[in-house]
Image (cartoon, rainbow, N blue to C red; front, side, top):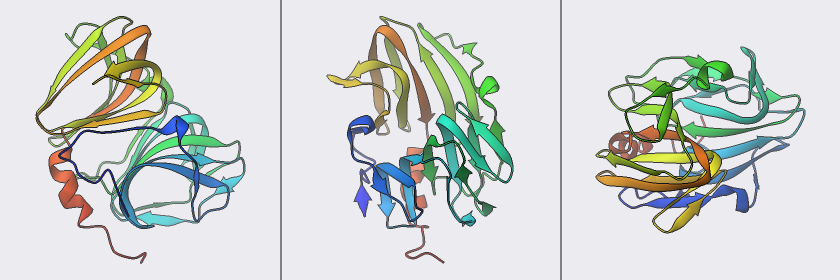
Length: 232
């Protein structure tokens, strides 16, 4: 399966308006944003766990990155309430579940091979913002390497947000809304801009809070070739 696999073109999807699709685990559904592969895939998705649902223990061969959007996600390491950001590096293993139900934003098989950091940033830390020098923008840093910069950006109301993206980037709206390229992006809307792009976004009366991942597209296509054809 290929969905928004061409990294050289702009891609967008408004996930709040698309159908939930079943996963192999009962009670776990997903909205696919980007995918290269079948059940084992390089994937960007929004995943919903019904109360009491769980996945069997499994290993993430290409790593897993997620942000908890709603509810409480759980595994053997503990509880992850809404706002928590987690990176499980390649080779890590866990048994995800949610007793109360949860919705998470997940990226699979998108780790640089040299990035082995285990990251768990609790919600209160992920909410701390710093000034950026960019008008109308505050940032909560989440993870940064030579290959990528992951953060949550807070955009003030009635502001024009501009950012050069020499190595591309992608955004997920967490709260509020903005317009870009004549398109309106609200909660759970996803936008990916190719390398060499310039983001020009305009916020309205509510401003916007967005998850952003920048600089990673140059190596993403290579990483997709490492995904195994079948589940081991």
